[in-house]
Length: 138
Image 1 (cartoon, one colour):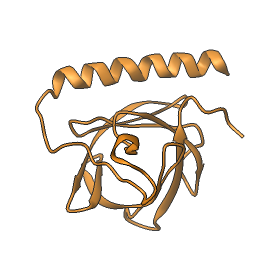
Image 2: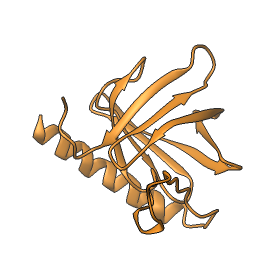
Image 3: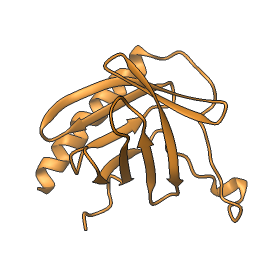
Image 4: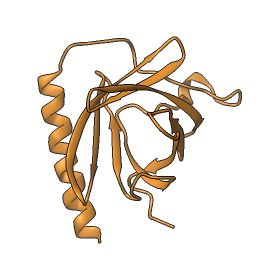
């Protein structure tokens, strides 16, 4: 399992690096959310981190998500090729675009240890709990 995760992370890093080279234009600053107990030095962001699905109502456990700062969304798992999409954070709202379909995403929780979202895509909303990719599975 560790070798598979290492191979997947290497592939994801390659896709992320290639995406950065291809999409080097600059957009809005990366979104940052803070709880009332956090200072500016301990700001929490979901951007430019590799997140792994720990729980979901329909996304495969272990799927990796990366929200690159220039707006590229990278999604991959051990069962599929990496997929590239787009994301944006405007007016306190997160929007994801996958396979040309744009949908709003509710941020339910954001901390350094957990990023929980609800994708309001066509059909039933999909809840996803993401954790940093380096965190062992429960």
